[in-house]
Amino acid sequence: MMQPSTPPTPDPASPDPQGGVGGTRPSGRASLADLRLLRRAIRCGWNIPSEGKDLAPKRMVEILKDDKAGERSWVAASKTLVSMTGATLASIDTALHIEQQTQLRAEIDAIKAAIAGKQEETQS
Image 1 (tube, one colour):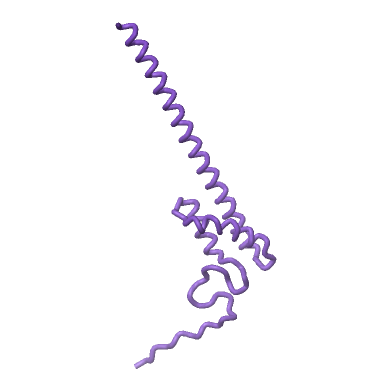
Image 2: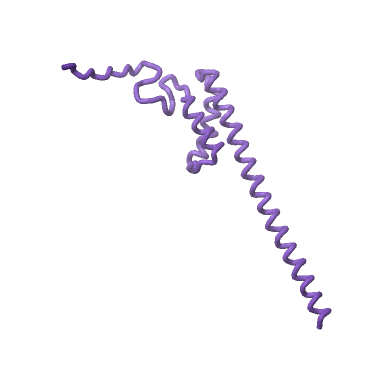
């Protein structure tokens, strides 16, 4: 009967220790997978906690300023910042449209009420 093999002991000096590459790598570089996931969350409109919304742009700027960050990390951080900006602008645009629709509805209701009042005056 074969003995089950024991998993190798992870080498802390290796670039991607066993168990995933989330967060920041030992080199200080950001995980590209995390940046892609954040960009997807923004694109799909996933609920992102307020703390994450505050910290994410700061982290992207840190990556862009980091000389140790590779070009792929720099590009991923840039794309994520652009996605964040686009999502913010889309939210502002939606809020403006809602406000305009609300104001327009109030004006239409006022005009309808004025017309109804004049019609009642002419009928009496």
